[in-house]
Image (spheres, rainbow, N blue to C red):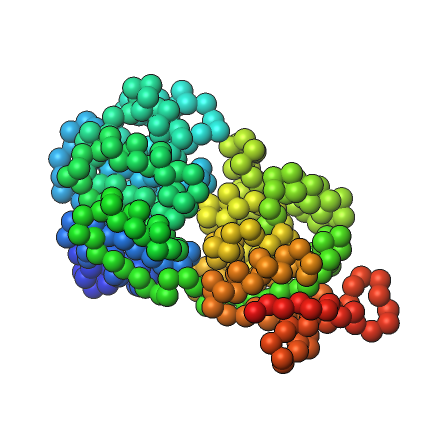
Length: 409
């Protein structure tokens, strides 16, 4: 019964609860249970929670509820701004699902595709607009978007939005929205400087932190393999052919590197595709769809996709290149172990060029990554404060090779 649903107890109405039950939702996640009552009360919210914990529903549900009890006026009433096309499309899909019994009108705009179809959708007076910053500003400047009717603003993935080049765009968007509004900021990580910046956009906000500030999914088994850069591809191929690697995401540092690695894996007989910012929207959607359907077992991606890929059943994440930004590690490995499932994250670390990046990651997540060999089994480490990873390089036949002086802390 709807009345017995924990979602109804949060204050959500029958149409939304019915949609949730139809999706198989039975119990709110911690971030949903914490955020939804405050958002329904009209409070501004600054929420920090790991990826894969239900943040999208935590802001979409109360926003839809607020729209249901307010009058339509032919203008956009709720705006969701998110950094990537994939995230925008996923949020739009959730708005459609959760609002299916309300008749909510929404549209999504992002770059990488022609804007004519988006102009036509905007002309139909949507209640909710989901947008990436660049395309949103383009459409505003051309007169296709007015934000003077927005009463609810959501900034998703706020740390990336504010810290990775979108700060000026976000300020311009906020300046076009009435000051009397509700603002919800959601992110997986909120460093102190970003909190200070975000604080100027909220009024007396409720702070919700359902886990420590920086965390990684509890059910993700993390490990690191020390391997020379020139040997990484051979090691990765061997691991991808291992038992249990059903669906894998592989992260590279550059777009060119993603293309090259995907092509090399394809030539070796491993079904692979690349996804990154230079790909057209159509190509990105096809690659993601093939990955979801299991037609492509391995998806090679850059960090632009780390927060935009929401695919069930990703068994493994491989960091082919260690991320330059330690926080990107959290978002990368958050693509596996989602919704309570188990997952594995393996980082291939060049002990000469990338050990400082590993140290930064371990400092951020406040734990030391277990060192494993290229067969995935734990290796002996020194107990004197140095992690001397003993690994066998491809082709070596005389005992393990020792990486000297690999100090992690």
